Length: 296
Length: 197
Image (cartoon, rainbow over all chains, first blue to last red; front, side, top):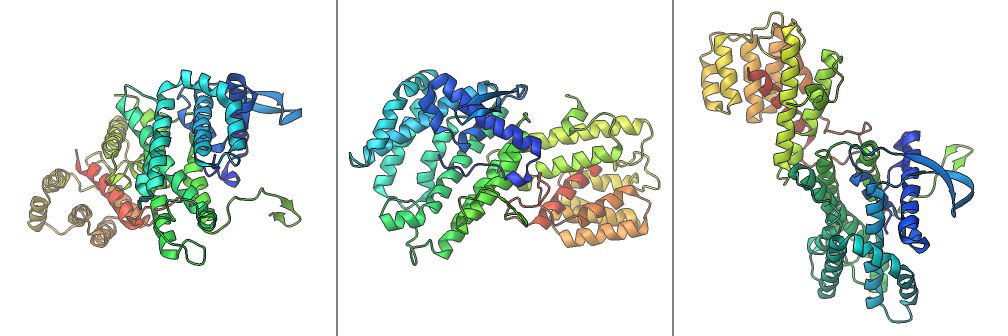
């Protein structure tokens, strides 16, 4: 989807990084197993993060090795399916489906052909996922529709726009009879969604300004020399960091699970790093290469 | 109540210092400054209460065995003047938030000794007069260097300037509130703990 929600690799312990990769592969396998091959193409970092968040306190992390299409010769470690991975696989399919439908509705016929084709591939998977998670499907559809309506009005409020997206993500918070479990998760997901939405808008600011596309930040600040003016950038940075802080304060109220350390890395280091990179034009980060002088 | 050691995240065999460290870390984590105007502030308060109770329970268990080290008044720390009757009254007043009464009591305090300085420091924390509080704790600690309660209060103060971060390298986005204030208030909460009996 976006790729902003990822750990800062250099600050992860080696075994944490290995486990994170296994979780990534685990979600891919869960997608393939439950929803067919096509759905594996929609794998993304955001949903891997969500799997780690939704992982049960007492649910063990079981890692096995197997070959897959991406690594046909060498066996790779992956997390064996868990409740969280299965749920997130379903959420991925539903989110992607509605995003595709949104694009199909927006773009001219020819331009939307690839999206039409892919949504056809995903139709079966979507139907299955929607059956399994009717509530999430319903809220995602509502969210996409209201986001669409909001964007067509081009209202000058970043929060009103981000709210719709944030609420979609919030819908992934599992209902719990225990209020102290549900509320922090719901709050965390809301601000995570808000953060992703604003990050994406800031990241796309220049290209949207050139192409004349709708962008909620563009609706607030006119570009200066094609770029987001400094005052606007400062304001957006502040609001992004505020959401990041609220994500972390909500997270600290949640019970620890096997992924807590990795999740902390994402929240405390990965997200600020992504934020800094987007605003300094260094996004996406390059893969680390070993050079003669050490890490590049 | 749940296992207090589990709440603090330490083994029951942990040393007093380890327990104290874990406790402080949790106090920093659930500090009201981190949840200012936050819809989850009530949950953070509950957590804080739980942590305080757990620390209380452990301190009580350990002081029963003659353990010094903790900064609970009257737990037998050498040379602590925390037990004076007037002092207790001030502690109770500060703890219940009756700062005017505490101030009045301190005005009529029998002596301007280490305990008076310490209590003045606690009161200043409560009022948010952070620099004053630092000076008072420094005085208290200078007058009675052997008192661990005063020393800890001072150490807490001088550790200031760091916002709570669970990930060691300080790249966490810092909240707008200012770090000094954050740490001082954390210390204040610990002081509150000292003040309750």
